[in-house]
Image 1 (cartoon, one colour):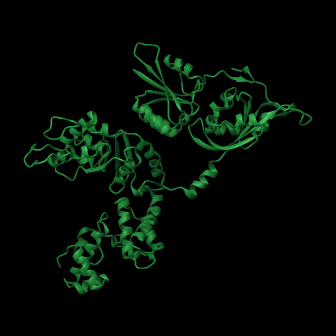
Image 2: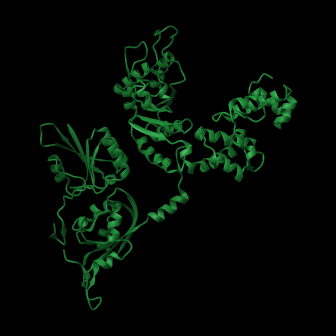
Image 3: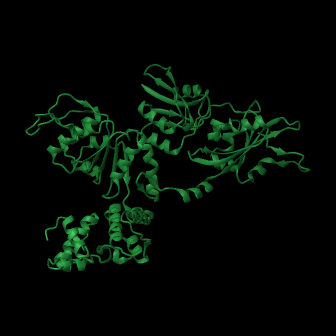
Length: 460
Length: 119
């Protein structure tokens, strides 16, 4: 193929290709039929198509721009004779969607007749990224995070929400499995249907079967009424089976049958009910290991594992700890009508260095505790639960210690109510049962202590 | 039975998967070399809806032009064979596929510049 040249601009001909290659953006030339005549290096880098691959082909097949399929700017430039500039996006050879500004200008001969078009592509990614950094909400439903791991999850969740496939959510306790399940339901087409949650580990086997699949009147002693079961209640919606790893083997078979046939048979009934239910299951257990140990059916795992979402533990989401600390501080500020502005450097250092075995739930509880305890405008180390600032060396030493107002053996997953109840008990023990002394220890008035004792049902 | 879906734009394979509003579904029966063709006009262009259609209709192979990585990975993960970046008339792509000669990235257009064949 002959090399294109620029004639009569200078006394000698100029190499047009070299000239194009020096331009730091994608440039290409098409003929009147919009077939590519020549491209520069910038174009090759942006689209991923080499010059050899692109030449002679319709530009829409190489460019793959949104505008190519909606309102071709070249067509408009041909009609008006004016250059056209438009913001759009292209899909590159390596399947990336790239925002670009496309400008098309007609190339006319000496008589003003258009012979072709010169088009430029400006990569808008740096500009868009700048904008996104300023305005991006790092969230999906009530989940938040800006770590790369969470960003991946935020990308896949909308896609999963649109499908009807079973989803298995795995992750340590406190990572937000329930939130993901609910977010999937809320973003799916089943959002108007019910979202029914069943904790497979919370009920004994016999009760769980009746709870899940329902029973008919007289199916067993005490079955005085027909009971619909959670599957039937979730008809047209989503059934969330949490702690699926704790599901007894006999019920695993029944669940397996449902996943195959989509029909449920309540206890004592010969007539099945076709339940239109999407199954979302979650567990903190390692199901693959349980399969090896014969504690979980492999075929059920395969059926549930159509789509899998693994939630990383908080210690692997370093970027997110600060974000979550601020998020929960704002949330509890609003909830408790406080005006705490932030964390003192020492307190922040302790929090950022802490491993959060209980993950986001533990972090949330720590912030809730600190916001409750803090009377000023900044959370200091003294407002953090004691187990963060005074690490416990062992269980025995903790037991030998005198009881204190602060919760020394704080359960990372305890809610504020549990913590407060424990604080009251500790204070009462320390005060030898005297409420006025306990109130002084807690820094409360006697009436507050009396009200709280009544609230928590403490027999003092 | 094998089902193949091609998003189309006129007589050509649609340059973009997410913007196609028309698809052709080829149904290949065992022992029948000529596939049954089923055209479908979509209410709107949507990659999510196309993915849903592909999965709910049991499509085994997708032949398309440009497709975003996200949808490519999702469909591949759902065991749908994706031949992307295929350019040219969809009829020709269908013929080549039936003969087992179609590859991802294949160009089925005749290369032309200012009306002259430059293939």
